[in-house]
Length: 237
Ligand code: HEM
View (spheres, rainbow, N blue to C red):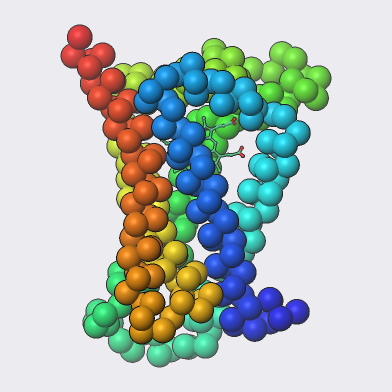
């Protein structure tokens, strides 16, 4: 099949799945922002999503996108390395005009996905997964003292409990730095693959990549920094 067998087809799959994941991140980050203004409002959002059928379909779609994006990333990297053979060891000096993140996208991807696993254990497992278990009849299933619908309580406990809360804030900020680098190059590369690659668009596309990456990482960082402040305030009180 063209999307699997040709290099441009594979890049197109990476681009489309990557941009769809950026849309998820933008909406996830925007919803999280409610935490800073009103924890009640955030819990209303959590109850609207929860384990309702449309949220479950969205989660399955999201999982599919992550798996395809990751599998194609591995496939493309292995193919590129095989095509370059021993030559890839020949040049060790930094190549002029080549940004660090463009050469380390797979490593950054591993860091991002590694933290996603930790993040799912931190929150999703205690929320949507717990609700699914209850729907399936395992009514006693509970992995947290908080109700699975109390997203605000769970996030606050995660980021403010001394001293692990502050450790988690620092870990999440490090995750967001890796995500920023990954998205900055990823968005640029996706738009480039989709045809925005002439002289006029090259600079614009680079700028769009930086703006989108900063917006996504910034939305999440505001929440983490807010709770870091709350946690430090609690420690000092
Ligand atoms: C301040 C930072 C963040 C907060 C407070 C936060 C909060 C949450 C919460 C409460 C859930 C569980 C929702 C539920 O099960 O109903 C969740 C799920 C999730 N989060 Fe985050 N999140 C943050 C950052 C991120 C980042 C940076 C990523 C990805 C790079 C991410 C990816 C996900 C994914 C994939 C899910 C599962 C979504 C689903 O079930 O459909 N989150 N997050």
